[in-house]
Picture 1 (tube, rainbow, N blue to C red):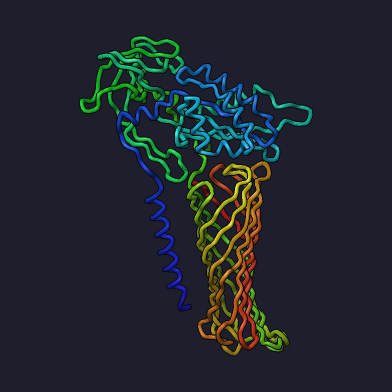
Picture 2 (cartoon, rainbow, N blue to C red; picture 1 turned 180 degrees about the horizontal axis):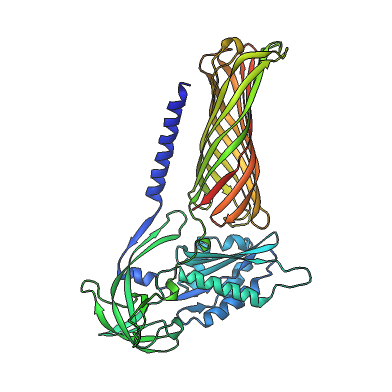
Amino acid sequence: MKNSPRTIRCLFKTLSFSIILASALSTTSAFASPEMDRRYSLESIGALKSHDNVDGLFSDYVHEAIREYFSTQPRFLLQDLTRSDAVLSESKIQYSKLIDDEQVLSKVARVTRSATLLRTKIFKEGPRYRFTVDWLLAPKMEVISSEVFYLDEPKRGESLGSEEIKSQLSGALDRLIRKIPFSGNLTGRDRDSVTLNVGDSSGIKKGDTLIVGTIEEVKRHPLLKAIVEWRIVQTGKIQVEQVDRGLTFGRVIEEEPSRPVARLNKLLQVIAQPDPVAQATVTPDPSLAAMPERLDPPRYGWISAGILAGNLGRQTSNAAGTAGWDGGGYGGGARAEAQLWLNRQWFVEGMLSYGLYGYSQTQLVTGAAGAESSTATLFQQRIGVGYSYLPGSDFFAAKSWVKLGTQSSAYTLARNASEQLNPITFSGLYLGLGGDLPLRSGWGAQMNLNFGLTNSAKETTGVFGNATSATHVDFYAGVFKQIKPRLLFRMGLNFTGQGSDYATGATISHRSLSITPSWVMLF
């Protein structure tokens, strides 16, 4: 087929440009200065009233759990947001929308003098509840870190205990805070004497050596407003002389001449005091522990690869329906898809699919077998931009979407004018509609419909002449299983159909129905 190489090259150029552009925009950076250490001191936290989709069932539990947790964390000052919560709850705008509004949250942080805010959302999904906790940095509400955990719905006759909620939320807050690469700040320096806002609750003991540093660079996703990378450089070492519950006192024993230890430098590491038996070992602070991958939610999109197995069909007919051919065959192939999230709603995506089928045909009226028996291929490509609608104000809950882009389906067939066989390509703009619905135990359902808005059909050498009109539709319905938070298995049925009409009244139609198992990796 003459147009296939050119079409493929065009698609890859478009995808390459999109990837390069996305990479160029993927992060923005802020660079080292005393202001950086001040901005990320993270000393005060305001905990917003939680939102859930079960009539506020968890609000009091979450409030009490957060209050108890920070009563044992002297590093942070928990601000009182009672009055702000009351104002937001009485607003005519839904609370679920207000806690996602950057301007509203910025005002709350300013009024309550909170450097950071905690936002908790709970959603009932089948027999379990999903808790999402976001730690936001004022005033632009950058996502410092996020954490997700689940609780099973209690069995009949049982209740969900407050202690279980407190225990799970406490663990989630520990993991949330451990995702940042420092565990405290220097609160002051007088000559060689320094103080830090962490104490023995962090495992620090007299005689330990502390490694401190300054934030040199913070990379943020420009659209998701999430911190994706920290770069901190060492400025010196401190010998611990005294420790109490919430403070550590020490003296500077080593520092970089070009980067002296200064107020608001960050505590990076604790080196335990050597004992008589063992040599000194470097013990990372528990708050610097690496997080398991399952606790780090995907931020940028997904890629999918799988196979397809099914059949291909083709039919031609003259205006009167008294002559034509009906053919098809079975086969399989491969399919790859990718989606890049530009922000919480907008995304771009692409798809490539290739199938190889045995092909034979019979006369439409008499049923006599044709002389042509060969192979046929179907190569499909699609690229577009889409918008997701999230009625629950949660990125990973049930959602629907609308897409717009270009698509092409190229059928390679034997050339046999006497049996009305000829390669043909259908292409044009498409509009897509669909959605997915999480069910239970990691299972979910998904459906997608793409139908052509502007369609064309072009044969290599016209059997019936130039097409006067064409149609193009693609429908998918299936289920998915969450194997891991970053890995899904998807299985469904995919139908694609195209047709073209000609001035003589003749028609050509193509169709394919395939089972499409695939693996989806989120990143």
